Image 1 (spheres, rainbow, N blue to C red):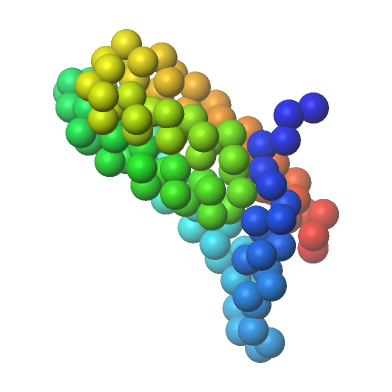
Image 2: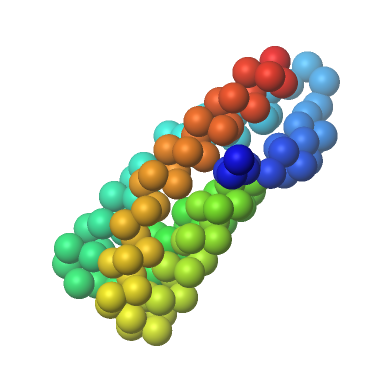
Length: 119
């Protein structure tokens, strides 16, 4: 079975929780889930406009936020997409971008499952 998230990343976030404060892990995961679709849209818009710099910038941001919440496969795909954009490799950008949305959804599903079990 493919592991779309690394629980140790989520445990590291949870370890930063301060008593009496809002649930940090839930806030971070919710932010990832709500903000990432705009990065995915920006990747697609960059491809549509043949603007690989925009693709690379959006992939970079999504790579970082994905890594932070332990969505390792998504982060790795975005790293590859960012590199392809930097190298001005149009065919690779299209191929790599094709699966980003599916990896995002699988990562969200895995995060939701983790959060349900951790509750």
